[in-house]
Length: 365
Image (tube, rainbow, N blue to C red; front, top):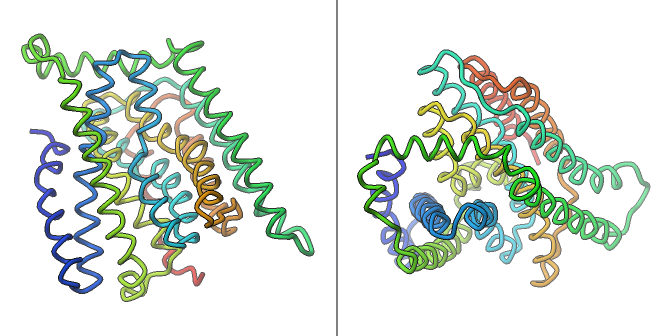
């Protein structure tokens, strides 16, 4: 049984525990920890249901479903937090998800995969395309911040209008990346899928020939998991400020480091698991693709949702957050450009993440 499946079953026990903790008004730290652990299996089931529905719907629709629902957990948590007025934490979680996917997830994948295989290969062209698109996302995050810090005084409405404009452009760019990956240049992305299919056929060939996913069953799981994530997120967000303040953690550290660990657990397990099976194409695609989805879709959606629910959120990030994202994108691009990886490169990515994490921990903001 895979680690992903073990976690999806074992951590379900924390859902009723978190509900009891909320109902009986236990310590906020207990509520925070149990609800965080309760979100993890729901995120895995949400990801699994999306993959199963994708198998039935075919490669094109399936890829689109994975692209749209790939970061559903992070989006749900962010919307709940935004609704509660935790705008700074939501912004920090956006940058934190990008940083953790590029440094922590890719680092763990390359490190653990490198322990088993001396050198692993993946398609450098995909890494270059993702790297170029991530550079645009960094620019979109950087500009509103720079407008404020290079001007004598800027109205909040002007920054919000700039953010809405940038959000619209980013969503358009994301749509173009879907056309590129699913239509005009889909052949570039076939390698990872072919390798994943061959890996699946090796481990469960007999099962694959007789088993066909039940569409309605997995649609039901998808709906239930989504509702569950939303419900657990309400509990999690309700306790996050008091619990983290009790631990002496700032909202910046909470958003950049803690929230991505909770919301991205499913992607982490998937990326590391396939890397250990020598499928670095898929591992790199999961890590970089998840970062792209957050930068080009999740962040712009949150800007627009904030307007609708009267909790305005702009793209004016803490300058150090912008520096962290720029560092993560630069280091990830440099390491992935040659299409090869080894354990040392994984260690370098993890070292960069550790230093950034320490910097956010000691950052006074």
